[in-house]
Amino acid sequence: MTEPVVPASEYYTDEFAVDPYPTFAELRENAPVCLVKGPRFDSYLISRFDDAKAALTDPRLSKDLYGPGQHYLRIFGPNSEALNRNMLNSDPPEHSRLRRIVSQAFAPRRIEALRPRVAQIVDELLDKVAPRGEAELMHDFAIPLPMKVISELIGIPKADHDQVLDWTQVIRTSGSSKNPERDRAAVQEAQLRLHHYLADFVQAKRARPADDIVSDLIAACDRQGTLSESELVTTTFLLLFAGHQTTADFLGNATVALLTNPEQLALLRADPELLPAAIEELLRFDGPLPVASPRIAAEDVEYQGVRIPRGSVVGVVINAANHDPAHFADPDRLDLTRERGPHIGFGHGVHYCLGVSLARMEAQIAISALLHRLPDLRLAVPAEELRRLPAASPFRGLLELPVRFTA
Ligand code: HEM
Image (cartoon, rainbow, N blue to C red; front, side, top):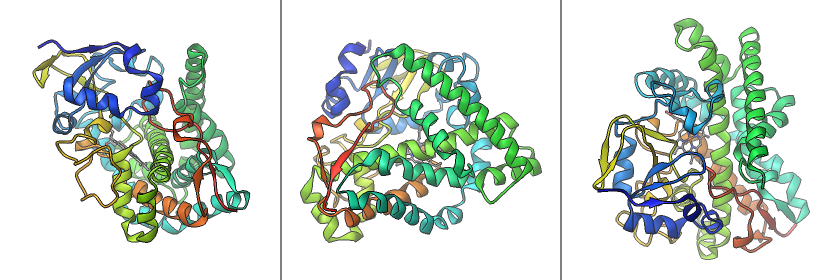
């Protein structure tokens, strides 16, 4: 069967940026595997839950973007290798080697020990905004919280946090200005600077190790010779970027979802024990990574009778799968009491999110504190008017989240 083709102009619309779920429903129903023409590259989108799970564990859908075929060129551009040749863009056995060593440094005990520090950072950020009666929660809270946490975990000196944050924000918000050429140049520049910074940073850590993950990684590599110097840099970048950007966008999306569903918010306020389940439902409802990172068909594959030719880019639409009525009753309704279903907001298969425990912990502490410390919290503008990342962004998140509350 030939696939339905959707031109970029029909897919990446302003309405889609605000609310992509009607489009996802239509794709799931009528074109569960379709070819979307992208601004930079075309990709086959897979949107039903069962297909999505199958695709995320399908060895024929490769993540080896830097291997034969140099598929990264289409997706990330020519200079991306210095930062992006990491575990997320590799297949086993390379992936297993890269992930094993980081998993050791990311041990659950180390993450759990961070709990008081995460709570302290949350309090410090909210101390600043609580007396004001209004805030812009993305920049006052949702972005700095995970950025501070992951920067401290990695061991980035405090004096450099703001600069590193600036570079990562250029990458996160790419495409949101009216000038795509200038945007692309700015991203290239930010990536280049970040790469130089991280290469120097890894060297400095080697000279002066401390109690942080990068020092642990270096020590483990020196003992076992398992990661090259450039892999240490790309791994540090992955932890830095994956470790804050998704969490920041999730905190923004989750706050909007709660504030626009007051009866659910009331349930959560009345029963704090609902919090862990609420976090999972909020992630299912409006996750920050709508499409999993790109896969490449290593051979011709077929899904829903559609042939996906070898070499094609494949996108698994996590946020469409998580609203599949075949798996979630009344899927477009936020229901914090929903029986905990198997959403794929943290992915599935070998690339399942490495930072899941940290993400859950940060989200639970952050959402709970927001609700308790900012009384009568409400949006300062109607939800439809919130400024968002552009439709073609790989991330779903807000540029700004203006709120008011009782000071
Ligand atoms: C709410 C927050 C988060 C969400 C929704 C999220 C989601 C995801 C998803 C969906 C994947 C799989 C991507 C794919 O298969 O293409 C992934 C991978 C990953 N995540 Fe997260 N993530 C979050 C927070 C974090 C945090 C805090 C870290 C900390 C470092 C982290 C580190 C990673 C890493 C290293 C990978 C790559 C794993 C691999 O390739 O084996 N994430 N994440």
